[in-house]
Image 1 (cartoon, helix red, strand yellow):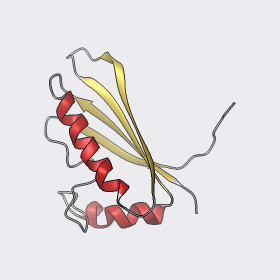
Image 2 (tube, rainbow, N blue to C red):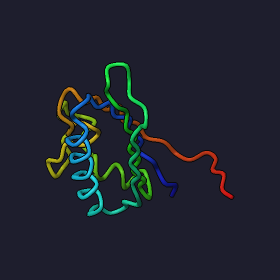
Image 3 (cartoon, rainbow, N blue to C red):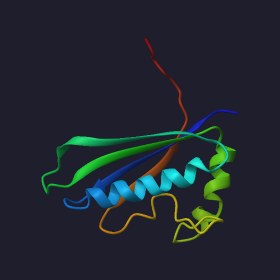
Image 4 (tube, helix red, strand yellow):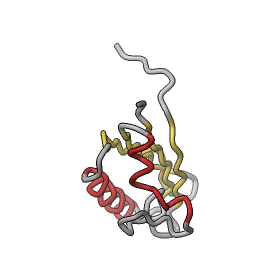
Length: 113
């Protein structure tokens, strides 16, 4: 099985950085307890947008698409994005006006030294 990376871009208004980071960390604590969780990396832009908001990128790697699906299961089918544990996933657990754009990717090329 091939790993799957869930990559979320997150646009956070000024003053909500602490909230966004706290929500993300709560999700990672939950994901760590799930079968198939491999890793997560969280990035924060060193630049601000014109409105002083800041971009984040969060990656979560799962050992397979099946493991990912087991965690998000019903989320694709309901507006609140709740999974079997009642956890709002797919970026739906972040409060407004934080904007999350989730997507799933597979590695097609990796360069290392």
